[in-house]
Image (cartoon, rainbow, N blue to C red; front, side, top):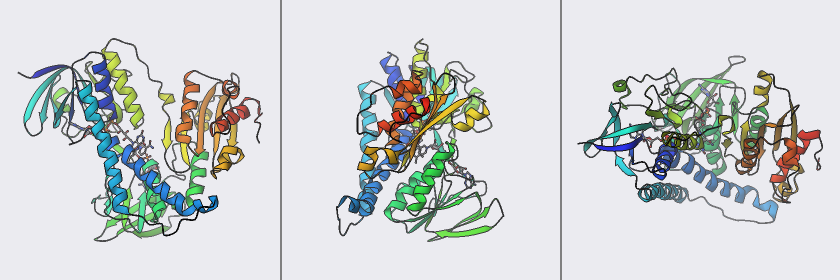
Length: 467
Ligand code: FAD
Ligand code: NAI
């Protein structure tokens, strides 16, 4: 007889494991299935956590070599111990994944190791060391995503690689071509550039991080260019060749068809990710994928079967860990009879380069397209005492507010610690604050947060105090 659960979750990424915890907190008998050796999904194993660990190590080195002198600190003979750096990253990953094992045990969640697939709408077969089946009154598909590629491009995982391989390179490359100037391209590109690799970014769009507010991409690109990153914006890749010790890329400029030929130790392909549903047996329960390979779900994240849900990267919406987590909690509470809500407009986006980029709400372009009358207020970090004290004057905060009501409609920032600063903007918008509400809130001096207050003052009645 198959063991029966109130809920069976397939996939243990931030969507799946958070969903499991919330289900268990609400008293449901819960099982989670994971095909990899460790829990935590893309985010913990080959995504958010290792990439941030690399970003942190490389940032420390870069600061030591390039910025400490300005503070009157001379460091001689600074060396990179690449294997040690890599080892630290792997330790961070294994410790963090181990933490999820602990959380599963603590919440009495049964963990099944193996590949899960639908036999019917209530039964999941698990192929691991042994084969077994379990049943769920409710089932949550949280199988995440995998790197995607360009038609005709072969990712050999040796010279032509994805972020997964880039996180575990055996030695520091001399040169790297990054295809795609989006989030992964610029974060991983920054890691290697800071450590001394020559990094060239080939991006089809005319700006980097093209889906974010245009001013952010422009500002970030200026800083990265100054630090030595090379950009081929508005270039379409026509050929990629992985050789024994090198890789080559040919790209054409959109505006005049001029060809560029690049060669490097590695080509990192970072052109987006695609939902992962291989071998899930969706055909056995009559679920067809949408045009982008996603599991279709409604506003309550239900598939065509009302007891089967899809959350995180495998379904519609931004491919972000915190979006997956929110959805995990959402479906758990929904199954429990509650009426949860997710405000997707307020899911923040962050790029962990330095300066960091962060954004929430509408961009100017979206407000224009929707014909919403708005006003803007900006504050440059160079006018912040705190930023000057820390030699971190690049960037700005831009606030978009409703022209009539002053309600904050969008906040976009590029600069120091923006990944953390954006939380205040999210909270303000969650409570539908006006720009003046934030402007009248006392912010400690000297902090980076004052820059948000100043941008709000600028948006309220153009009355920033320090510009
Ligand atoms: P995943 O994390 O992909 O987890 C899905 C899990 O399901 C996997 O463990 C997989 O093995 C398992 N699985 C799949 N099919 C089956 C099956 N049939 N049976 C059993 N198990 C199965 N997002 C951020 O918000 N912030 C960041 O800083 C960030 N950095 C990133 C950096 C990189 C390099 C990458 C690649 C991604 C990054 N992301 C980041 C995106 C983030 O990792 C994803 O949005 C997030 O992991 C999605 O969570 P998920 O639970 O939907 O799926
Ligand atoms: P992305 O969508 O951010 O960027 C891909 C870029 O590749 C785009 O700018 C696109 O114009 C470009 N591109 C596509 N085809 C191209 C071609 N043929 N030639 C040149 N350029 C081309 O995707 P990315 O960076 O791969 O990241 C995947 C997902 O992972 C993102 O959706 C993101 O949400 C998530 N992620 C989030 C992070 C964060 O929150 N900090 C960090 C890393 C990943």
